Amino acid sequence: SLSVQDEGNAVEALAMDLALKAGAMIKDKSGHALQVDTKESRFDLVTEVDKACEDFLRNQVQEKFPDHFYLGEETATEKELERLRSGLKDSEWTWIVDPIDGTLNFVAGMPLSVVSIGVALGQNMEIGVVYNPFNDELFYARRGQGAYLNGIPINVLPHDTELEDSTVSVGFPSKPEWRLRMLEAIGKVAPSARSVRALGTAALHMSYVGAGRIGCFFEHNLKPWDVAAARLIVEEAGGRVTDMNGNFLQLTAGSILASNGGVLHDRIVQLVSD
Ligand code: 2AM
Ligand code: CA
Ligand code: CA
Ligand code: CA
Image (cartoon, rainbow, N blue to C red; front, side):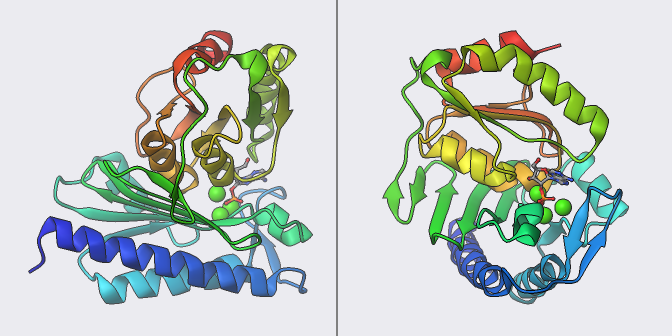
């Protein structure tokens, strides 16, 4: 059997290869007539392409690594989510996958959707890959080895960057009550920020934090697959990821704040924490 290091290398190679292949499927179908269904509400959409990408990713992972645990947005069962909540075993590999982050952009034909593939070893994210097929940007991180964009190392903004010199990014969850909570939080932060962006994909926002394009990202009520890959990208790029009260973020996610670390992180927590 493989050493943990060798298995990590094989997982890394597969995660990158699959992100590129799923990304190509997404780009191919963009702008075409799609079958669109609703999920939990009229605001919560899924397309045939979300499902096809997830089936492809799940089958590939299960074929190459039959003993790994796979959790993906479009196939996750209550039992699988419970396994994540109750805590993963130390030596267990877990794939946490969002086949399309930014489905509403995809449905509308806006080129802002990514494939997000995170792989945990035990309770820690070990590998994170976020791929935007529309401009061919591949964000990637491995625990302890830094974060990269298309092979070039990336870093968050300097730690002394203040809110006044930072663009802040946010997301609007599908549940109306959580949107109102977001508007409250944005109301406290926006007056002092350089500007505010909401691009409709949490994984891309967080990757941009890692690349130093924006200072921070926060959103309520996110799911594990929205943030699994990109949190490692932010951390390995020198940033910080917590919940919106500044506390440790579990793999189960929820409310999240990703930033360059330093004074900006503390300032946002001070403004939005409950
Ligand atoms: P998704 O595209 O994979 O569903 C942005 O607010 C984040 O929340 C996205 O990462 C998006 O992931 C998720 N989300 C789910 N439903 C949403 C909705 N109706 N409106 C906005 N975002 C939604
Ligand atoms: Ca979705
Ligand atoms: Ca998502
Ligand atoms: Ca999705």
